[in-house]
Image (tube, rainbow, N blue to C red):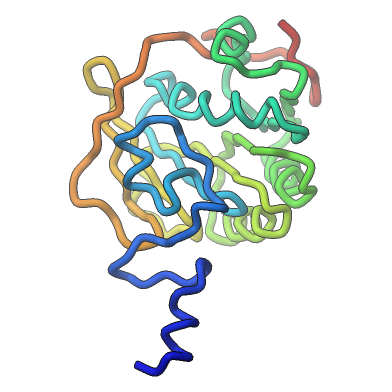
Length: 225
């Protein structure tokens, strides 16, 4: 191998199929050591789309993200939530350290509007992170989100049902979550560097992040404590 080619392969944006990507400067650590160790760069990819797949909501998926969201809310960017299925539970979010003044919740009137809103939030560069609960997913729509995340250098998290695990996806990271005693079993289905052979257990405290009532929030609202 020539020195020139070797130097190219050492670039942080280049990864090989047998290696994890070396992108620490573009990753946001989840704050759970067992998971941090397995993610490329040690965290959620920034400027890329992450899929979180689960059979049912409320198993701890938000608690997996709250340490990162709390850190991001202390910066200048907004935390955008698009089409959450339940009313965000402000008291629990605040207790987790999230600055509610930085949280924006969008409830678009249609699926097309929801996808458009998520794409614009990622592309704008004004958001520290996007969380979206979108239906009618297809590869074209998801690729637009991935490209928007790259453009805005924003981390996007798309929540989907576990049955989508067999679908093709342009997301940089795909996680399948399953409930486990006092935590979650996290299967890494896709990452830069290849999947992980077995689930990793992530322990976490129990806390509610959303009320089990359908939201009657306006299209765009700021969540206050």
